[in-house]
View 1 (cartoon, rainbow, N blue to C red):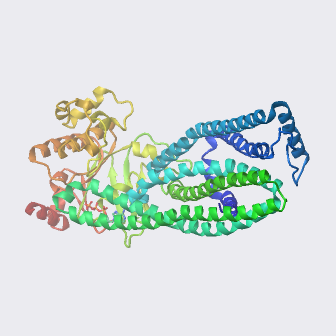
View 2 (spheres, rainbow, N blue to C red):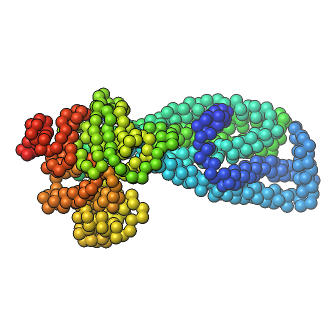
View 3 (tube, helix red, strand yellow):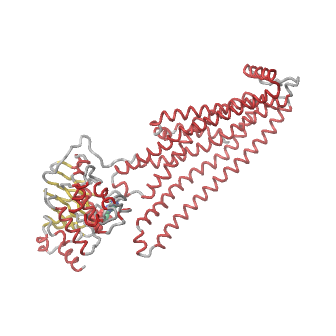
Length: 621
Ligand code: ATP
């Protein structure tokens, strides 16, 4: 009902650049959207024409026309059009009599409402693919962007929050698409048509209605404002709750193993409570809106009835005209309510769009340089030249002044205590992060100047934790190698000592391995990731050795597979078990982000320094 306020808010919304950004997503659906808009317009027109049609009906009903009484009472505001209308109905009465004319007028009403509802359905029919299409595009874009964004982006974000943007925020945007359609096309036509009619038959009455609406608008508007603020807060709390659900699912094994269910349940309970609290406050306010608006509506209608009836008594307007005026007024209140709901959902949608666009517009800190070089093979060596690195928001650097050369065909091992910077060093090579200072040179070229896709194509990564996807064994091995044949996949699996266990699975290579490979043992998972790297057959290998202990049988199988993987390759190996690095060409000992010792196993043992201490510690362990 707070029409004026809503109109103001709507104009603000429209001028808002965010609104224009939202409309940008509709562009690919121009045709469907145009059809929906046309149908909406036609629907509104049917609503508007049904209003004056009521007048002759009432006039016939109350005037006793057709029984020799004057068919229509003269109206105070006669216009050419009104005269035409009167004439038309007089003719109708003469030709068909009172009952016949009533029937025709009623049939017209039925026809008007049939038209209205037919076009209402058609507009929704055309709008459905637009709504779902925009939402699908947004989801797709978001996922693509997540794949493109550097890893550093994700260490700053909560996973659950990102997921709630995928689900809840995108849903809000979908609702706001409906809102835009209603607020932009349908309701303005109905409202302005009804208003025009009201102004035409009773200008002073209309002025009076305006004052009343303004008054109730101010009251309802103030509720709407806090509603919006609280809904933003609720959305972000939901993100935290989702984060905890995600964390619980991911950490079930440890939570159960450490009997920490209560601990996690309490953490979740705290967040869940405060979300429920926010939502309760929100619902109370929202629930207030409807009773309040009904009460205000009835109050406005009663005052209007009183004021209008006085005008009828004074002979300023006729009874039927007043009733038609009331009908027009009613025709405004419903769209005005819908309009107000629509602007509310547009605002919420714009808020949601902001959260979605925070991802879509996040800067790609790591991307290809303009005119990046193509590279198809690795010929000579990789060099770390004075490389230092500091994580964003970290107090101290993770790597300092690293000098290192990895010649083709050699294996360089990184060892050091936990937190020494080994993984960070390995992450710089495929450009998961860029060095803060210094350069990494591959065959004489800074890797920042190479095409990232080419650079990564040269590398295979076997991570500490076996990263597997909820898919078949075959797809998990072959996902980065599009054109791998079945026999190539099998050969890789054989070389990784995985073929034996795979063929014993219920559906062999087509067995689904469950979420993150949960249907396989630790050693089996590792061998699958090794098979994946063998199939890709990259010249450079980054191997983050798994720390989880395997039984000796499994360990032997994994070890043999790794040795096969390292054959004739250039490799950077993060070694946790020092027994595995003895054959490395060079061992780099890191401590606090610096290289403290380097050399072969034998030379470092002789040095009796840091490395030897590590070896002795492990021997005792
Ligand atoms: P581990 O053997 O335990 O895996 P590591 O030697 O691989 O350890 P890194 O993971 O490279 O160590 O970490 C080096 C330092 O950088 C540590 O002090 C760590 O706390 C810090 N660090 C790692 N990742 C981040 C991050 N995303 N943001 C901020 N600091 C980080």
